Length: 102
Image 1 (tube, rainbow, N blue to C red):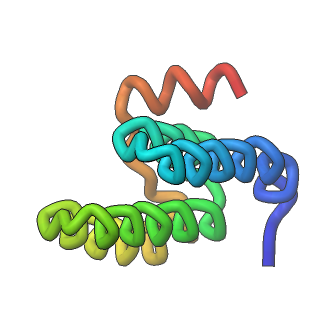
Image 2 (spheres, rainbow, N blue to C red; image 1 turned 60 degrees about the vertical axis):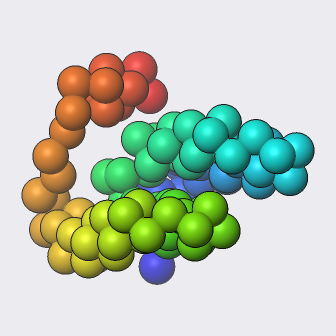
């Protein structure tokens, strides 16, 4: 179930996800991941989008055969599930800048 924020930000997050899919299809894996990171920043206050984007990042890491990133995303998925719902987010300065412009 999505809250009001999740519904309001959905189009922007989906847009970044679609851009990520397109760039990966073009063979631009790093650019694809940058779009997933943007989707993450936009949606991280929503448990739904936060978890979904980390799952997409995990899928990306599997396709890249990147074991370190896979492990990192597994931990982040657990954190997103448990922390976002409680309002316990740690913002980087980039994320804080992005949030203030949304």
